[in-house]
Image 1: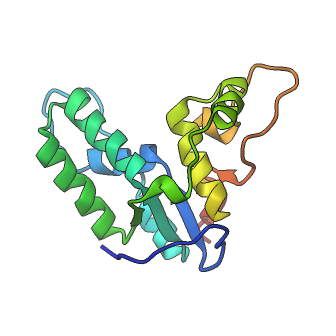
Image 2 (image 1 turned 180 degrees about the vertical axis):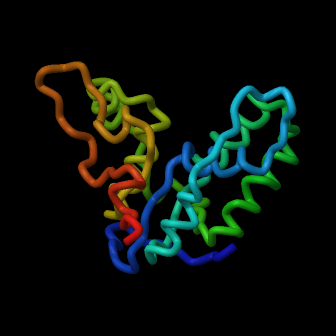
Length: 172
């Protein structure tokens, strides 16, 4: 895995931030469970994004979410879940930001903004990392894509949020 550093406001090089759901879904493709009622298929989303020329980026926040979900929901050991997660990053050449302290300021003002947006804290943290890097965030999560809020005076937390289908060119 690359140890390259991304700097605040560096929107060059076609970087694209991935939150946990795309990587989690991709990881599920490598788990075989006979008792599962449905198979999870991502349609090769990460492969397609790679082919579109995106430099995929995520953060240690995603690692925490994916490993935790694989452990809690699928019964994998933390060690096995971590290995699977890292193999997905390696296979798709996803850069992982380890030190988020340069991108996230967990202050009272930030928490107030999150509280008023109705975003989950983890989702707001992903958005904050992408926003600090000035790169788009890719997700299937409707709450994040809409910067979800039930308030009439809704303020968008970060505008550069897309679903994969908006970034992948259709086949000719």
